[in-house]
Amino acid sequence: MTELTAIAPDIWLVEGDCVSFYGFPYPTRSVVVRLADGGLWFWSPLKFDAQLKAALDELGEVRHLVSPNKLHHLFMGDWQRRYPQAHTWGPQSTIDKRSDITFDRPALSEPAPEEWAKEIEQVWIHGSPFMDEVLFFHKASRTLIMADFSENFSKTFLKRHWPFWARPIASLWKIVEGFGYAPLEWRLSFRDKSLLREAKARLLAADPENVVMAHGVWQKGKGRAFLERALAWI
Image (cartoon, rainbow, N blue to C red):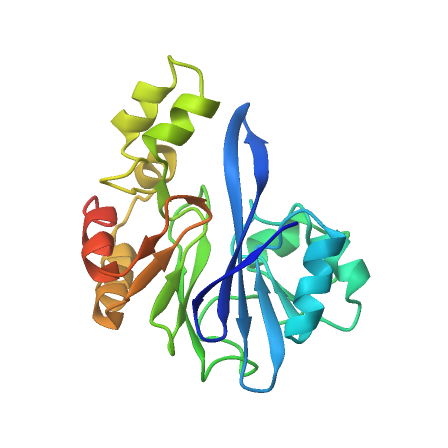
């Protein structure tokens, strides 16, 4: 059974199976937030699982399905069919990629939609032709939620799932524990880092307690220190 793990009151993690990204296994993770109105906010939905759906239904009504970037959309359609009443959100890059899914408007960027703006803030990482991503900060738990803007693979995971020749590349790219950087190709694609520097300042000012990413070891406690390391490339 896919289990919900509480980070703090009204926010949970869900760990999923690995997916292949250019032939490399990537672990998957979702975040669920119960909003003040009792509705559930479901970020980067995992592969559909009936037991997970039952667990979600016990927490509340799923009202928001959220894609943070154009890579985190694979299972949105499956969940939308199970929750046709839910709002489905994504940045314009996801909307352009998935014409088969009906998304709410406007596209996610900044500021957050009024449906969750009082509880979850947004920071839009853009300025790269390669990819953009919307980051989310859950105020009550001081949890920063990132998809690919930080990748934090453990040595244990890489040894178990990646070929021996690829593990040094992960370390060289600093997408491993101790760094937690964004992927190298994304970092190199920013021609003007002024928007990045502004976003970094806002994220550090939020002083997160926890940092959750989609791929790798998430940071429970001392979130700001982790973020300083993960964003040191900016």
